[in-house]
Length: 356
Image (tube, rainbow, N blue to C red; front, side, top):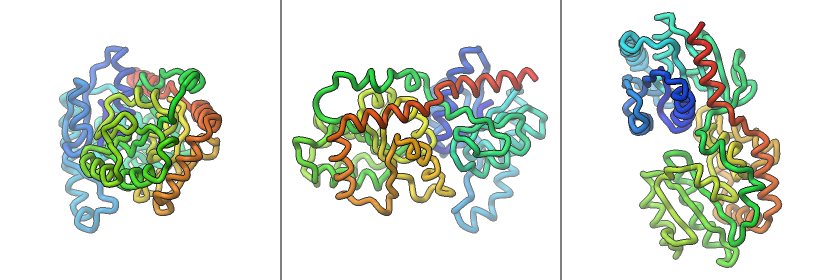
């Protein structure tokens, strides 16, 4: 039983583990919510999805805090019902709202629990679940006391990309820059990019593939048009969602992005240098902590959103576009940090725990 939900940062790593578990012909089910991205992605992957009535409480005010005990109790009861029906031999909690009640229900039914924490600062759900988990895995070192550092699971097609040296060899033409703000986009990045690109001379302006998030797509197109830039041209392609991130990473020379745990894992697996702009309202500022791993190894530059202007972003782009050796060096340093066996290792631990 997979327990994960909310954002792509929880769901995509869980799906990577699913790919490995399916190689062992494991029967699968998923605990999630109707509001999270799992409601769309899990059924597409032919997995039975069971919904819990639960939501986050941190940062949502007094009303959410007062409702929390009732919602938690109800979702635990719902989890107990699902577990009684499916009868899993092990549950895997990957974080998100559904993971906590599911883990408590599994503990009550004496079902072994494996926890995987993606971020360098553990979320509330996994901090609590780790207390009674059978096995604790983590995407970054030194996150949880009993945690084993295995890295963050990424899909096989990303982990299996050729090395930066192979991909970059013989490339000609303009620098290719990929912009992603997470699975739902980042409005601040979407707003800055068109203004920054306009300030760069057309001869050295990079090629752009920009994922905006579905909600922000039309608004971002308008921002490009307002700068007299065509967002549907050969030089600039603006899309709401990228179906194949592996293809996007293979195409790119450099990435501008948030510093979510999944993004960091994918950058290392693919081997790409990056400009990281952490989401400033992330709980415990965990994105800044995530990004430090790449920055400390020379694989990324990090700029806080509050300190970044269109002019500064344009300057960063001009520097990176003019230095192919720097791009390759950053990409190689990122690749050295990859833990491409993470999905396989989490699946192996689940199988091991299920056998007792």
